[in-house]
Structure formats: C-alpha cells, structure tokens
Length: 291
Image 1 (cartoon, rainbow, N blue to C red):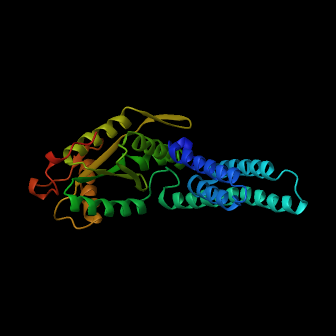
Image 2 (image 1 turned 120 degrees about the vertical axis):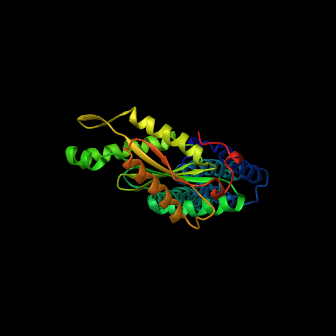
Image 3 (image 1 turned 180 degrees about the vertical axis):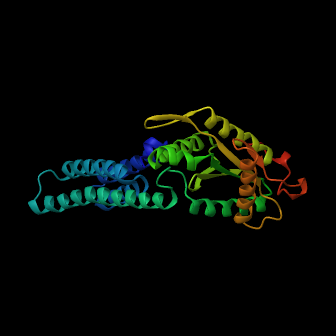
C-alpha cells in the first residue's frame, strides 16, 4: 500500500515533518545521537506504508543523518565513521526489512479475506461482516438488507464453453458488482456462481433499486471471454433484516428463498422476500434507499 496513491498524503507529510524535526535537533544540538530517533520514524513509515514508504523514509533519514554528521564532525577518527556507517546501514535495512514484512503480512491477510478468482470478499468475510452489521442494525434501529445473486444458466455455459471461459464470466460479473455497488456495500462471492451483497442502511425498496441496477447493467453488457461474446443474466433475491431474525443465517436464508422464487418465475429478475411492515427493524422512511 502506497499512502501517496491511496490519498493518505497527510500522514506521509507528517512523517517527513517529524524527520525534519529530528534533523533540526541533531543539527543545532550536536551532542544528541539522532540515530535512534531516525530509526523510530523509519519504523513508523515501514509499518504504515510497507516497503515503498519504508525505503523512502529510510533514504530521507540517512541523507539527513549523514549531512548532520559531516557538518558537525568534519574529519574524524576511522572508528567514529565506522560507527556511523553501521547506523546508516541499519537504517536502510530497517526500512527495507520491516517494510517487506508489512507488505507480506498484508498480502496474507488479503488472501484470507478475498476470493482468489474474483477478488471479491469471500464467504468467511461475508459471515463475519454480516454478524457485525446485524449487531449495529439492531443496536441503532437502522435497516439492513442482503442480496443473493445467481448467474442464470451458468452450468450450461460451462458445459458449452469450458471452465476457463466460465471463470472469465465470473470475474466480469464480480467486476460489475464491485464497481456498481456503493462504497458502504459489501459485495462477496458466496460460492460457485452465487454472489452476495450486504446493503447497509437499505430497506427492501432500496434493494429493488440496487438489484435492478445491477441486473440491468449485466443484462445490457456483453460479457466477453476468449473466443466468444455472449449475453449473461442474473437472478436476485433480496431480504431485509426483521425483528424475528436472530442471526446472519436467517437473513441469508430469507434472501436465498427469494432467489429461488426469482429462478422459478423465469430468471433475470429481482424478487423481494415477503414480510409485513411490523417485521422490519426500522421503518423504511428513516433511511434513504440504496442508489
């Protein structure tokens, strides 16, 4: 993760300002050994920004450190320079090693949360996130809904064109879900050709809006895979959290039953789970619809 690319430039600027303060301390207070202070800034950069920021902060720190040392001591005994040379090497190694370890740890975490084929969150993360959102919804009385999505006739598509082309379609459907969902929504791959989207702050009427938008986007797009160009449609079942649903499994089951009805009614449609107005966690008028 490069903070400059992700828009967290304020933290990067703060880091280099901190190094400037260390430089000033070393320059005007020559008796202060600033190596430890510089190492602290390098460590912060590597832990926050990974290898890229770790190396950047280490390069800046060593440059400032060398300048301060040369201007403050001029020609000095060889043992003195050996000590400061070791400090410089340690700073560079600290930024590189800790930064690389940070990147590796983040990569492992990402693999544990994401589906390898589509890049969406996996089912394990879906369950974890849904439990957290249910707790929040019940605590604050905000609506929460889930979409269950199935690619229509996907098995026959695989039989006709092979699994590699089927995988290409899965990735393209996932791309639509990722790019057309709101930032607060959580699109996931549920398994096989099924996907799920957690819709926060969204009642059933909002599910209809979001579901129709996703369904239309995919139905009107030609999903290309190597050597073929074929239309693909999806069926969607939607359910809103109600007062009688005690856990994530109950909400997913309601959405899955609505998905079954969508397939029974001819596919390429959105079906909402049946509920009475009194069942919803919060009145629909208290929250805006999904967009």
